[in-house]
Picture 1 (cartoon, helix red, strand yellow):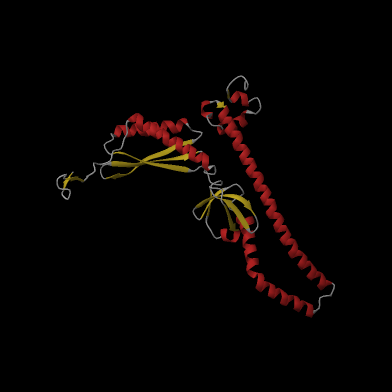
Picture 2: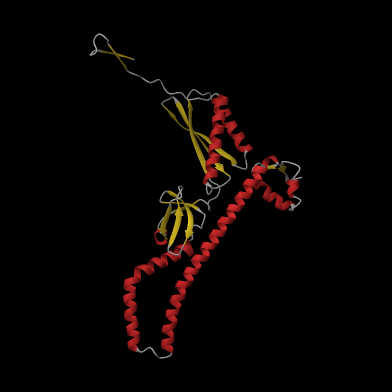
Length: 302
């Protein structure tokens, strides 16, 4: 039972869900491969759901705000058009009045033409292209940004240090934008070097230990991975790399960095266990010895 044990298993969930729902929900918890969900895993899952719902609420709120702004803009245009049509139907608008209105429209188009073009491009970007929502983590101009607020004309982003950045939507529509939130499970890479004299048998054990670790943490890493030798440098070291796939995208950048840190520390433990090292080549050093009797004379040694 939930209050009698320190973990939750499938039998506990079956009290509240049907078998098909349990099969869908259970793998979402960390440590589900062991058949037991501890308090930490359950807490992390609840926090994640809360953050997702909070982000969705902000996205819906900002979408409503943008729609209201668009509604006001369209209302103004419709009122102007309706007034002109009413004047024509009531035969109040004479040729002179229409000519006056036309001249004023030409002047307005000359003055506000660029503004109207900018507004139109912004509307297309927000409602048609729609490359992100509030809460999405994106990359613009090589800078990682979090979408804070969306309006008709501008979008407000937050940098990693919480600095606010305002981008005109008409400018964003011309830039390539990477969206982490809408991306599938993403891959990562870790590069390292080992001594050239490391036996092939030891390298095989290294690959096996990496495989065991990734399979034992299937809720964090996909089992499919690749350990490659990139090159041999100075016939002294092997430059290698581990490429693996997270079971998440990089929307939660803090969690992504935590997972990668844990994997690097696990690699360190494996290196120590297998005795894998890397030593620098012997360095040629010149030392100058000063003669005490003749300070101006030096003797070079190596």
